[in-house]
Length: 304
Image (cartoon, rainbow, N blue to C red; front, side, top):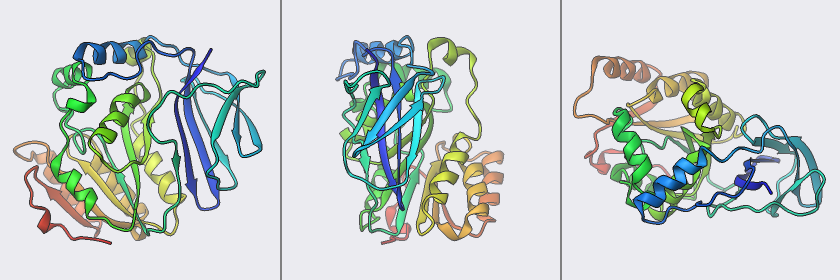
């Protein structure tokens, strides 16, 4: 019997976007606890648990039922032209038995009264992931449970200065296989709960062979801003990958929607490419801050 690996119901102005991922069967381990071995078995097992691909399913919200087909990675998304806090239920097309949802992370994300939303990267922005060192990143992801992963103190404190219940969106190129690790990390460290946008769920062979969409983060952030026309956005990222380039493109396209941009310096020194990317980002005219890991929060403007 397939299960719902991940489910989200996100409200925007006048509509609800329901998205998720289905797997063929429930994993033997879906929560790592504090054991390095159990954590490794959970993560490795996810790459050998096949997605429920290219199958007809029913998404039900209130009394409305929507028939859709999952994609090659078991993912689905449907835009519904009303807002509702009701439970989302997933069925197979030929069954009245609701599929089991195994996540502990929140499903519903409602509109708020705040005029500020925060869009944040994950790896090396909120969670130490050693993105620049492939082997260290691999070993950390595999053997260190989310409760033991290090949080970035500056970003953790930065989130607290935004009052009036802003919306949070987390956008990462990590694949949906790592959803339990990332969601448990957010819950354990009491970070703001927000919708997670992760790349498609992968099998082991897809992980080895496939290349991720370089424009994934740009496309997701663009769609969030387009669906939130009256919002101001704070963008938070780091200099280990392409965040400065992506945020520059976003700032040039949606300048009136961007309030601040924060970039975390991940190394002791800034190289020539990072310096050049930072100058280009500053050239957008958006208030931007390139902060060191031990930067003092008093230097950062506090926005309500």
